[in-house]
Length: 205
Image 1 (cartoon, rainbow, N blue to C red):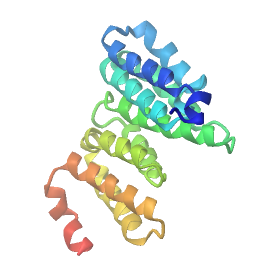
Image 2: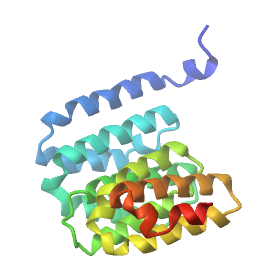
Image 3: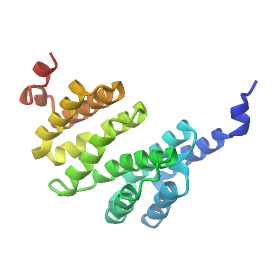
């Protein structure tokens, strides 16, 4: 028998729309991209009350950005930065949208060239987001990190130090788990040699 919450909130339909968006990534054009991402950010989908819908919307957006984002990097960077720098409304929906936008911001940054001064800024935003209680968000952030670490390898030592500090000293389980995800993403980007270079294993022991 369907639960009352299922009857009150037909989330499956919205989830289906998100899945359809992802499948349509191959036919998106440069002209479609900015209005679509603007719709996701400002009109509700990224802040949906259902976690499954939010996750699928983020997955659809990251897929589209990975395939088509190169053509609108500057416009999308401006949209994401404006959203993240907006006044904090103190609402749960606002926090959900910001977390999703940071993931999209990281996905878009893969299109930046190595040495671009914006890459470390994006990485710092991603690392700061790892303290969220949502493991889904932490995993998505960790997936964004490897190419960005490769594009800003001169900052890698600082990234590792931040994550180790959080991992060893944070009193919150979610923050320690997020730091572990972050550390894994950094090592994937830098390579297995990072374990020795930054004395990660000896420190953890």
